[in-house]
Image (cartoon, rainbow, N blue to C red):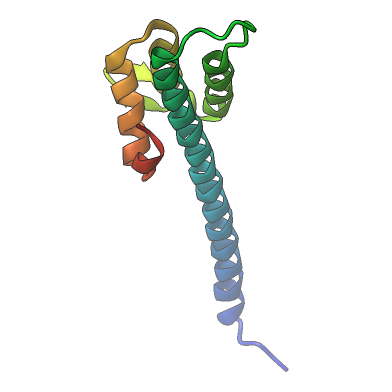
Length: 123
């Protein structure tokens, strides 16, 4: 079977375009998964922090809020350079919210989660 010469470049272009699209889809899925993981951890931190505000200190010395904050900070790493407004990155805003009780920074990261489609994961 002979293939007309005009079809070969078109087929080659379609194969290349399909490969790029598939790669871009995987990248978007990975990014979406990372955002969901971060927002889930952020919500867990908020819940633990709010519960700790009403609880008496744990005599064992185990700081549950700190452990949950560490999980959120680890989940944030691949996304840390993303801008969240006010000249801050996600990393800066997350650190300020968790370490300095910066309510403005916390609002920025909660808004980030909302803009990413994960508003229900945060408090």
